[in-house]
Image 1 (cartoon, rainbow, N blue to C red):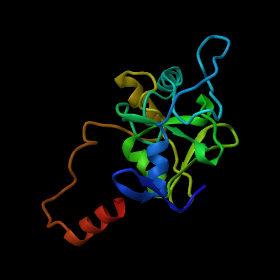
Image 2: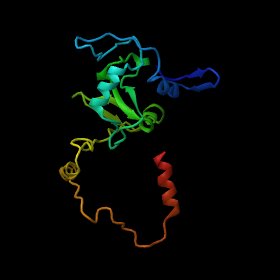
Image 3: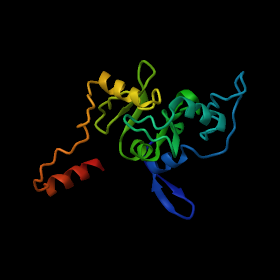
Image 4: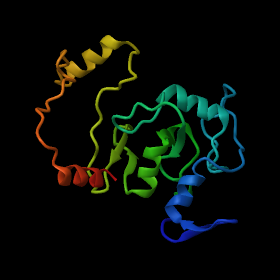
Length: 183
C-alpha cells in the first residue's frame, strides 16, 4: 500500500515512496521458465527482475519510456502496477525508466498505467495524460527524425536552432520562477 515509512538498517527512516522506488529492482530472483526457456513472467514470487526479463525489456523499450526522454543508459525496470500493490514481475507489467523519471513517478506524483489499448500512459501530478510524440529511437537514422517531426507538424530548418535573443536584459524573476516550476 501507500503511506507510512520504511527503515533502512544503518540509515534510519526513509519515506515510503523512496522505499518503493529503491525496492523496484531489489530482492532474490526466482522464476518460472516459459516454453522457449526465457521467463516472461515470474508472477508474484519476487519483485527482482531476472536477467532474461531485463533483456526482453531492453529489446522492447530501448531506453526510458517517459514521453520525450531518449536516455537509454542507467535505466531501471519499473513495475507499472507496483509489486507492493499486487503487480506481477512480468514483461507486460514492467517498463524501463531513467533514474530521473523513475524518481518523478515514485516521489513527485507522476503516474504510469496501461491505457485501454494496452499502451503505457504517463500522467502529471494533476492527473493529466502527458502526450507522447514520435519515438526518437524509431528507425535509427537522421532522416527519420525529420520525417517524424514533419508528421507532427514541426518543420526543422537551418534557422530552427538559431537564437531569437536580441540582446535585451534577462528577466531574472521569470527565469527563477521557471526553474522552480521544473522541480
